[in-house]
Image (cartoon, rainbow over all chains, first blue to last red; front, side, top):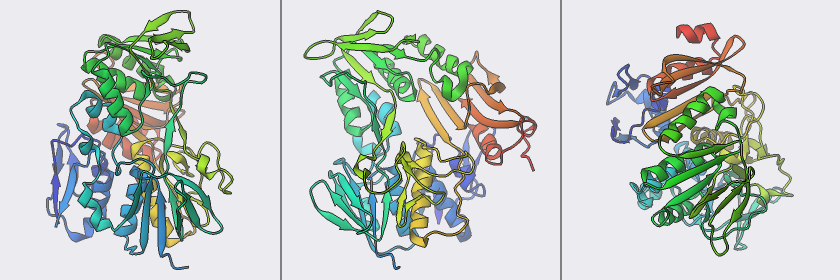
Length: 63
Length: 401
């Protein structure tokens, strides 16, 4: 899977960081970073949670 | 019992997330989603901001495009209200007299706006809850020059900010001495009030609405202090009430919402989620009814999982309430649960620059965090709050053990 964040939509709620800290991070500069764009399959449940919980629908998974 | 048919009542955020979760978890039986509005599920937070300000069209609020529902394989019934449920027969009856039989039922019928008691509806007297409400208000704002907003809660204040962005004069009327004080405390409520006054909002506090005047359409409001506020539009934002009337006499326990256990179960095979539900919440204590976006997601998912697996011993639900509000160029984020007498300490930024992180202290615990334009603070304190961190641990930024 490939994780794409639409930075135009990202509103820095940080729920993705909570759901999948292995994949998402908000730095001290207040910018969201995708730590790994192609996470291992065992992180799918966490990334799915991040997608579901993102208040702006900024995260999508491409297979 | 094999679960072959699941009905979700409420084509809402909670209802949609429940349906998605059922399919994600492999449920391949009949799945019905019922919504009383004609629209497919849409997102409410943009209504008071992007939609009202005219930067978004309705399509941008929809969670999925029309063809995005094909993979879910839903029997989606929109524009029809659920009228009643027979728990024994496991059957929902719709307002058009059709029936839907279910093995599991998930109720996410949300809430509706509270209206001013004793005030008859009339043109120019509006509320904001639904997409249609937002479009009607937006249309009315193109012709309005002066708006009176009754209730300076989050919805009222977001509407105020959107009106100001459109150049419309705003008077906001709030019964409390300080807006939002029961939620964020008087200091931060005062900060938010000052922000609105700086943007030209005439904020009247400690007064209530005695009457709405005007004949064929509104001309203003009369206040409890004897003053009058002339207005082309009156927008009422004084909270919501849960939509449970259709369940009266069903046998479900209704008490300011549907009373559920920690698995979102309200009766055998019947679950509830979102604004309409009171779910036992270990973090919060008791069974609060929470009207936040993230709560609808969490409970929609939780209800769906439990509907599939049935009651599992030890199922718990523990969630720290989180909400946000965008007003002018400020993003206010709040996590936790504050009470008016909690001590508030600004740990980063300042009140003066309106960019800050504040922690709420009760005894030796940190109980809430509010951030204004400091989103990264939420990441840190969300974890600390979830773990019931001590005050000292929160101050030092180290999770309690």
